[in-house]
Length: 443
View (cartoon, rainbow, N blue to C red):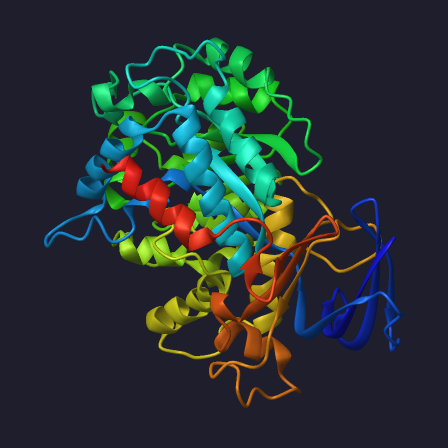
């Protein structure tokens, strides 16, 4: 039995003071409010949150930070540079890079990650002798640093889309693709992680890379959380309308993909009917505001989606920034820019997007909560920095969302394991490992 004592913690029913949290076998066994710290309890000073989920990550994109900002660029020119980085990775180098990236997430306050994984094969498209070598390297990297992971094993079959149909794969895309949907299923169903912190989900890369018949196979054959890039760019919508006469969301709906276990990533450019489809299905939408503004994607319809019935969660996607507080805050700030109004979302609702909604999206149902039976994943935000100075104790949610940053995270516990103490990972020098692995990749 392990115990923690929080000065102030966010419980499902709201903020509470003097909260004792006991953990058994990686799960919260008791939560007692108005308690006193026991001898041997780990004291968590500050504001204690449930675990925060990064519901959309491409770990290798972290290597591109600060390297893709030529004047006049777009999402499509950025993608060419991303392909160059993807071409260089091996199972060993990807493991090392991902381990450092996942540790950076932990230090920032993310306790779980949905890794949207599509670097399946060798650079020329030939499978490794172990067809899942790259995926297994990612799972091992997450296990090594103690972050919870859902490996969203990605279907990628085609090179693009226009009015004439699907394009063949380009040389840069060969390593992403399985030969057919049946080959994908055979490879993906062989993934069976042993770590209690790992599970497997599915991703449809996009309507550009996966045809409707293959989408139907996924919807019918796999009982997993399923994610897809949806309407990230206007050109994607134009391509889909030209080829199929429908929007990407409509195409996914017609293929049977939309459901409560489906998450649309980005969903930046939706029609009113798209909003209705996502909401009626009870699907989630993962916004990645720091990436969406870095890539000039646009501002997604966050408030319209929630009013339609969809659930919001957050991701750091390309890792231009790794900071869950900035992602939460940006959802509200982008709405302010669009609506010219302040206070569109309540702070606790944004924290829920980052915690319980995110855990649900990546298949850890019941997680992202400080409650009996939930995974013992918690994050402590310290109060001692200049950013947090003067925070109103009566408004802790506002302090978390509108003042805190990744640098204010003092402690992170995942499955009862104390993986970050005093802001530093327990076993890895994050900055040094990121520098080593990224420098070697571009050498």
